[in-house]
Length: 549
Ligand SMILES: Cc1cc2nc3c(=O)[nH]c(=O)nc-3n(C[C@H](O)[C@H](O)[C@H](O)COP(=O)(O)OP(=O)(O)OC[C@H]3O[C@@H](n4cnc5c(N)ncnc54)[C@H](O)[C@@H]3O)c2cc1C
Image 1 (spheres, protein in one colour):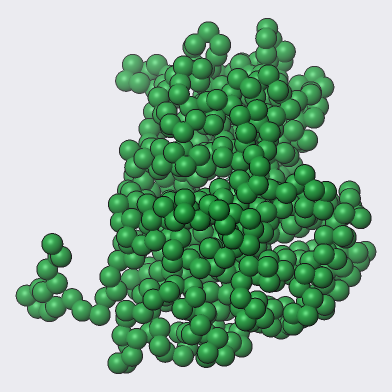
Image 2 (cartoon, rainbow, N blue to C red):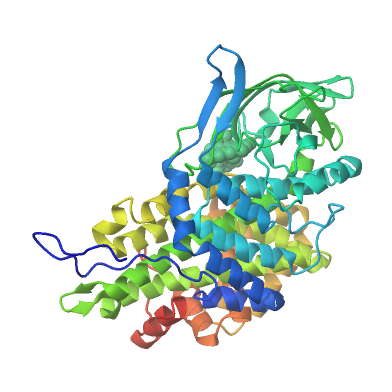
């Protein structure tokens, strides 16, 4: 039964209905096009079922509850005995169960920890992108679990033991040693107080002991503390090394992980991020001593990819909310969506969201086809560039979407404040903006031929689009200049823009691609949304495409 809208003093009118019970896949034409263009056309039916499920009012409501009831650290019991247990709201566990059922934590791996065949990356990314629209905090352990497999793969025997638990469909939150559980999740601990980017400064020590190592030290950020095991960096005799540290020691006792407190974060509230000390914690080495950074880099590439996919998802939900509201709200006798200035703002945002969607899906295709050296080089060069651009534009876009809802957008009952608070973690975590630019430079320095070939390919794929030639020339000139480090943000941003134009050309209608290139490559966009030169006809078409009404 609908809630009464008549009060003693007034009737509730001119408010938009909730954007709930929506089909997150069926309403997202850009996503459908990108999925098809990147080899996952055969998965459309399954993705549609996922989009319907995750767009239900029930799931959206669970997202609110999971974030309004953040996890609590139970460091001790009432008798002062250490528990080191983090308690999550049931809504968080429900999201974990849903994501496990869809195997978001493992679907890109085969049972032997080798890469699953194409289009596993694109299909998972489409699901991950839709899940991020509803609840992003729980995706932290989901991301880390799937990415950790890339590092664990260097230890075949260990990976073989863990994979059946990692790849299971049934989420198991019970706090017991992982061999006794139906499934497991993995976290990672790299960042210490004195350095997160520069993990060479890690002071945590690892000493060979029995069948493994005893690790003593601390981590300043270690998210998803209820994970069953963590990939941890520590200094061993041979140098910085990677270890797998389980929550329980082999004798079944609580391992030496002592949580100090949970971070009081801007957003990402449903997820816990802990400060932790290790006291002779048992761990197994992963990879050779002294090669810890090289080992975790396998994993980091995948977490960076997920940051970009999630940010694209956050933007998509913000845009959909804004268009939905503008279609219902009447101001000065006309719906907002029909007002030329609002159309200009929404259409400008829609271009960025479609570009981000096409860009991340095309990047996932490169991961799917990484057996081909050219695609592997594309994944290597573009992952930091795409993370840089997509994660960085998300907060501004979400803010603009919030403003489209007026005051309601600023109020917690709308999802916009949560999306907005969530957005800045993706650019900071796993390599902040500058670090991404330096990583693009590193790829160019280490494998100059392969990186230059990727840039040439992008220029060719975007050829004839307005501004593509000039953009490609600028990127090459800037990245080869003597002061390339200081100027790399400009080049990396343009590189990702060029890659977006190429990705759009492969998946979106020609008029969308042309509009993107004309307003993003040929001319610099203004500092705010709504400043691009988009015709009224294109604006109307962009809105209809972004949210078929
Ligand atoms: C919510 C949240 C969860 C997290 N979870 C985890 C986790 O589970 N595990 C984990 O290990 N870490 C985690 N982190 C830590 C995160 O990965 C680090 O904060 C991040 O890598 C940056 O490291 P830092 O904080 O030490 O900053 P710094 O390394 O000090 O960097 C500060 C700034 O300097 C810039 N910078 C760095 N080097 C250069 C350079 N050479 N030139 C120019 N600029 C530079 C960076 O881009 C950044 O903007 C988490 C962080 C957050 C916010």
